[in-house]
Amino acid sequence: MTTMIWPPIFLIFLLSIGQIFAKDCTLSPLGIGKDDTTQVEAAIAACGQFGTTTFEAGTYNITRKMTWNLVSSKVHLKGYLSFKPDVLYWLNANNTYRVVFIQSQASWFVITGSDFEIDAHNTGGIQGNGQQSWSYFGTHAKADGDGRPIALTLSKVTRGIVRNFRIVSPPFWAHTVAESKDVIYDGIYVNATNTDPLYIGKNIVPNTDGINTYRSDNISLFNWDVTCGDDCLAIKGNSTNIHARNVTCRGGNGIAFGSLGQYVNLSDIVTDVVLEDLLMTRIDPNVQPNMGNGVYFKSWTGTVNGVPPTGGGGGTGNVNNVVVRNVKLDRVNAPLHLYQTNGGHTGDRPSTLQFGNLQFINWTGTALTNKSKSSQVRSVIDIECSVSVGCAGVSFDHFAVTGPTGQPPRFICQNVDGLSGLNGGWRMIS
Ligand SMILES: *[C@@H]1O[C@H](CO)[C@@H](O)[C@H](O)[C@H]1NC(C)=O
Ligand SMILES: *[C@@H]1O[C@H](CO)[C@@H](O)[C@H](O)[C@H]1NC(C)=O
Ligand SMILES: *[C@@H]1O[C@H](CO)[C@@H](O)[C@H](O)[C@H]1NC(C)=O
Ligand SMILES: *[C@@H]1O[C@H](CO)[C@@H](O)[C@H](O)[C@H]1NC(C)=O
Ligand SMILES: *[C@@H]1O[C@H](CO)[C@@H](O)[C@H](O)[C@H]1NC(C)=O
Ligand SMILES: *[C@@H]1O[C@H](CO)[C@@H](O)[C@H](O)[C@H]1NC(C)=O
Ligand SMILES: *[C@@H]1O[C@H](CO)[C@@H](O)[C@H](O)[C@H]1NC(C)=O
Ligand SMILES: *[C@@H]1O[C@H](CO)[C@@H](O)[C@H](O)[C@H]1NC(C)=O
Ligand SMILES: CC(=O)N[C@H]1CO[C@H](CO)[C@@H](O)[C@@H]1O
Image 1: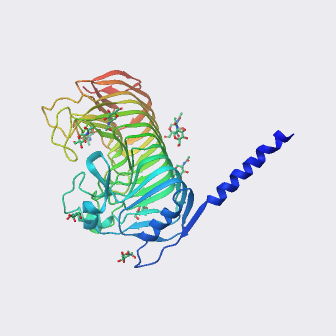
Image 2: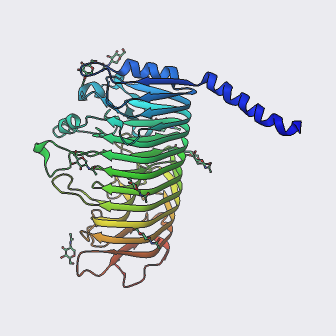
Image 3: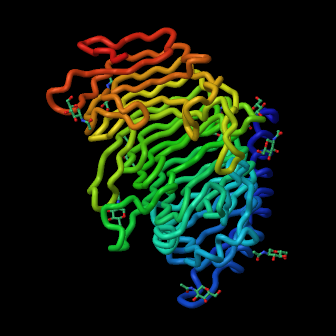
């Protein structure tokens, strides 16, 4: 009998040890005109490891860059971290971090650590105050790596969860996950919408990507709603085991694989990606005129044209084992596009980065135009693989996207070894 009794006692002992060390911090906004950065840092320093931090609803004024190191901890973020609108301050490289290697991108808020959960309860997240930056760049040149900050960067995270989190008006990419593994994003809202009357009907919010994944493994992107002027999701080099489910993309460029092959000294490996239950929908053209792609794949050419962050090319690698299923398109320009000429010129060496085992299953909806930018040829599907390596296996199953009324469904497939499943009246354009 004694052997039956001691395990519960042992368990109670462990629970009470846990309670002794559990730390709880709760904070509220200090109010208009006050700076919340110091109290936010203090709360995370006190409770961000083996504790719980609760941000009550409201707006927290964040005036400088911030890193949270969360270990075995929970954060309830019921309000918004509002990053001060001061475009020139944030462009000064001293005022941001450079932890995202690709294109030397800047971050104003970095979360690192392990075994944490941040729940913003659909009432909080980040207010990026991006309008000032978007309007500023309406008349100033912008370039990759110029210092426009990513709104939320997860860097070197293991087993982190970001839940019910809203990012409103990000000046640049909303989310980035880099050098991380086993991360779940669930219930994510991003909205980059211009309200400056000067730019009605123009895409003044380029680079407001929903998320970029880079050098990361086992990342889940569940239940996303993204309104932006660029890539809804961008899967960049060394993203493996990526699973996106239930993603709505409102305007922008669609879901991207790439750009890949920008760094001649690096190889970009992207494997085992499942994207499912996607809706890509065009919105009011006065608000956001672009709805570029459904899903697109892009690599640089095989020639080095300048150096990153803005130039590049010549990088190697491969993209293998991709499934994109249950996709609904609403008036997108190019439903499915693959090209390997990003940043290139005629006469460049073809890319050696190879795409293979790409499966497109159960696609419906409409393409607004039947013309793709790179080829100037009219077709719903436009897959132009590098002549040097080709694509190894591209298959379709129930791909029923329609072009403009009266157009027979047409496709381009160049240098594809192993094409299957385009039945039902599809005609190839060569
Ligand atoms: C944020 O804090 C700064 C002081 O660092 C203050 O000047 C500014 O007015 C505050 N902003 C808001 C919106 O309260
Ligand atoms: C950045 O900080 C360094 C070291 O304090 C300083 O020398 C430099 O002038 C600063 N740069 C700018 C653009 O403020
Ligand atoms: C992927 O990450 C999730 C969340 O941390 C975890 O539950 C799952 O076990 C991981 N999968 C693998 C294969 O490690
Ligand atoms: C995005 O923000 C704009 C401007 O505030 C708003 O009109 C629009 O309804 C928002 N979109 C979504 C999907 O919430
Ligand atoms: C899909 O995600 C949205 C949030 O973007 C959510 O409201 C909706 O319930 C989700 N649908 C399913 C079937 O989970
Ligand atoms: C690759 O080249 C970039 C410059 O383009 C450099 O910053 C980086 O350190 C190099 N990486 C390796 C592994 O050589
Ligand atoms: C991707 O991982 C491979 C090793 O698997 C490495 O050689 C390569 O440099 C990595 N690429 C990037 C962009 O980090
Ligand atoms: C096909 O995708 C649609 C969403 O676009 C979904 O409602 C439907 O259930 C899917 N069909 C199958 C057989 O999975
Ligand atoms: C945007 C575009 O190129 N649309 C074309 C679609 O195809 C029809 C018929 O071939 C053309 O008339 C349109 O110009």
